Amino acid sequence: MEIVTMGDITQVPVTDLPDDFTQTADAVMLDVREDDEWANGHIRGAVHIPMAEIPGRLGELDPDADLYVVCHSSGRSMRVLQYLAQVGYDGICVRGGMLAWQEHGKPVEFGTGDGGGDAH
Image (cartoon, one colour):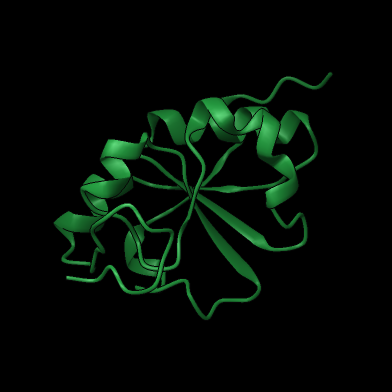
């Protein structure tokens, strides 16, 4: 098995990403934070799969889409991306996570729903 190091993982600044992933058929924003963190603010159109559930829910990810992974500050994203690389998925870390997203004034949705109707 190939070992993937943090240095091998591509990172993207939040300023290079769309504000909303509901209409991006070729890109997926994967939020790997816990349920309470998700409810306290997430990216519109993101897919929510907490980090511990990733191995059992790989089938929910489109291997052909551009996969962006976000967490609170990038730590969990990097660990998830290391795991995904070992099982054949390429992904990109959202640099600085939700902290950076909100710091740059990017919009967030609140609530527990997985998209649609929870915007504040």
